[in-house]
Each structure stands twice: as C-alpha cells, then as structure tokens.
Image: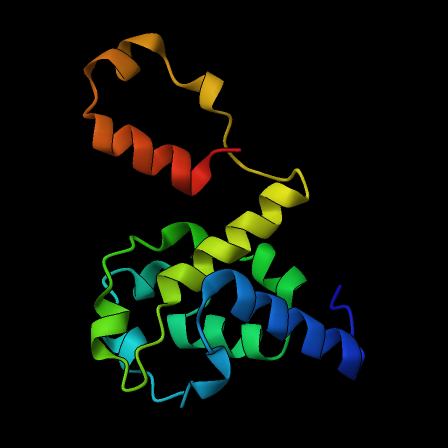
Length: 134
C-alpha cells in the first residue's frame, strides 16, 4: 500500500536523504543516462533514474520495498554519466540504511559459513558487510 506523504513529511524525507547521502537529488534532470549505463538496470524492478525520482518525492517506504537497491553494484557508472554528478549508489546505500534502522535488514553476517569467511577475499567480505550487514 502506498502511503501518501504530507508536504512537510516529503520535505523532511528529501532533506534527510540529502543529509545522509550527501547528494542533492533535487538536481536530477531525469535524463536517464544513469539507467542507460547501468549494467544491472535490466534486472532491476526500478531503474536508477526512477530510484532518484522516488527519492525526490519522498517515497522512502516504496524504495525500501524495491529490489533495485540490492542490485546496485556501486560501479559508479551512473555518476560518471550523470550531467549533475548524482551518486545513485550513495542514495541506494541510504535506503538500505533506512532498512537497517527499521531492523528489516536482509542479511545476517552470522549466516556466512566459516569456510567462506576464511577463504574469501577480505575486500569482498567488507563490501558484503557494508552493503547488507546490520
């Protein structure tokens, strides 16, 4: 169910998104260059430019329910193509942070088998914890 935000709530959500991501999402032109360059956009339920638009509208609950925030590979192709340099990976990370604050995280670090933690590259594990951990 879509929750209708009041204008004050919407402004607060957008301001909080800006504060946490350090991205001025209101500058987005909706040109779609981020989506065109994203290697995972075909697999996402929301395209990168749609994520930014929903963030602009303060639709945080809908973004938290999206699978797209988990597909972001933080490859920064979106930033390199964006005419106003919006880092959509940072926006997706903030939405995942909202999930963690709500205690709805999808990943428990304790669920990783010991054999995997001993053999996997440390950078991969750190990235995994940062992206999906509590």
